[in-house]
Image (tube, rainbow, N blue to C red; front, side, top):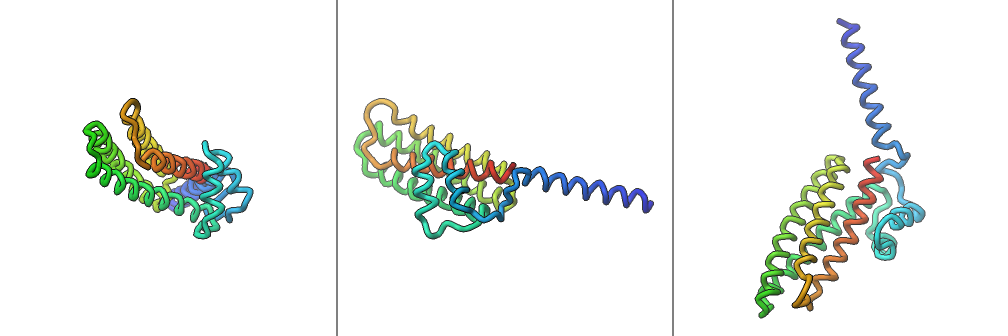
Length: 184
């Protein structure tokens, strides 16, 4: 009986060690201090590195650990999405053009889903499920692109919504890079 318990304990210990090694195989742990070189590396892997650098280098609230940086960008995305849905709701009320009103209404639905995805990303992050953060962030990107696609053709969107969409897309690209680093 002691032999079975000993082997069971040893097997569990080896499994835990292999998971820890696999999770942090790139040598970067979530508690790793964020350096200027790391920020530049993260930003170089995004589609808009200058936006990324502006966000991560200019904000005094940016934390020092990779874990804190991930939390910061998820929170920033959530704030952006929440402010954008408020903008969309005001556009729905203000616009006189029925085509634009319909497009804004559909974008509002996209943003409802995107905010739900970001809420789930926060939950996944709290559970250290960085792969889940990646999946949910990809879902947010899909919703943004669906919203953007609604404005192909006339009439053009005269509002700030296209810029808000692009900003959220850029923030999500930062989250994806960080979550990929953390899940390696």
